Image (tube, rainbow, N blue to C red; front, side, top):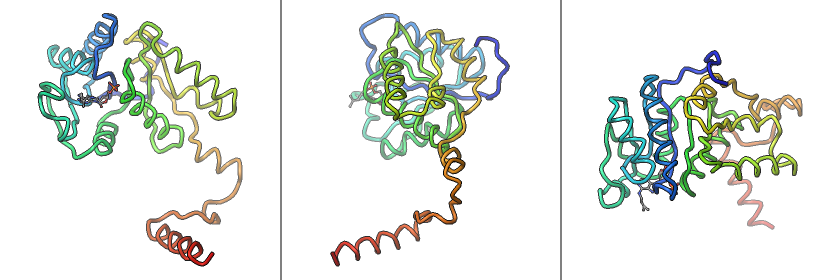
Length: 232
Ligand SMILES: CC(C)=CCNc1ncnc2c1ncn2[C@@H]1O[C@H](COP(=O)(O)O)[C@@H](O)[C@H]1O
């Protein structure tokens, strides 16, 4: 939806991408085009730190164009032999959980470029948060050379099979064109969260539910469960 009126202000985009370059030159080229487009629009980059693979391509491009770069890297991955030199600002964290939380909170939107398990894991985490309503930030796939066609077909299959709600398909925006994808992120209007939808559907007030909500209630529930378990 190029030129669409922006509903979301994007100061920083978190880009998830491969720690490998992939075996087609189009992937690295797309990382450079995306990095230039973000900088042109004064959108900073949040990424996983280091300079390996596509992560290196995009961070060096944004840095070279004079844009803002924030890398978030766990101490264990920081050594240059593991992840290469970082450019821009780097935050060191203790583990992958802290890293993902810091990346997500520093960004106003997310783009997944081609990548492997690491990229998929990071992507699916924010998709899940969005679906449940813990987060309302746009998420897009930069579908270079049809890299994500298989994932998009899988989502359709999961919808047909009744595991993903049709209204949640729109959580995953997608385009092969970086400028168009950023436009889509800016125009994004969040779908109703699953939590609020479920509450409406069931018409059961949360106050009346038997679920544990606070850590204190949680430990009481845990105790009850353990007692019950040891008695039976
Ligand atoms: C131990 C090892 C192979 C290190 C390579 N160097 C790395 N340096 C920094 N982040 C990384 C590295 N490897 C994977 N990641 C993380 O996993 C994601 C990419 O994994 P993948 O290539 O899609 O699956 C990145 O977004 C990053 O968060």
